[in-house]
Image 1: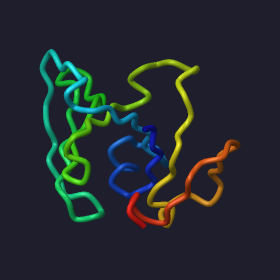
Image 2 (image 1 turned 180 degrees about the vertical axis):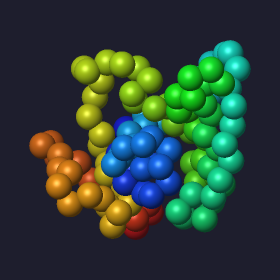
Image 3 (image 1 turned 90 degrees about the horizontal axis):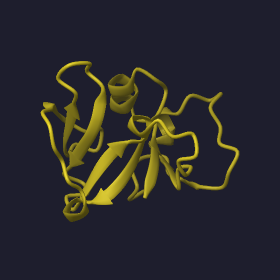
Image 4 (image 1 turned 30 degrees about the horizontal axis):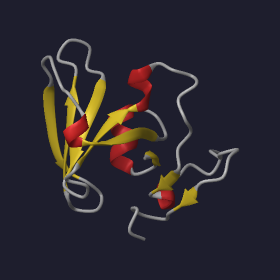
Length: 114
């Protein structure tokens, strides 16, 4: 599942207008190396832990209370222009009006439950 998130927290986390993450079942992810964690509450009010590279500060992956069996990986970390496009766009109530997608995807004004 690949999601584009427009919430204010993702905008701050990425330093961009949208955060794009690929979500994988946690049992299929192998994590290695060190990371630093920034723990916060998401706009939904649920816990959200972002893991950063301790050397360069790049946002690498996150664990969200909202989806406890999944780990989100920053799509930009793959550095792959052929990476599949997002399937869903969430928190569009915070979306910059000039940003648009050229493909079909699900649009949610808030999180994936709305």
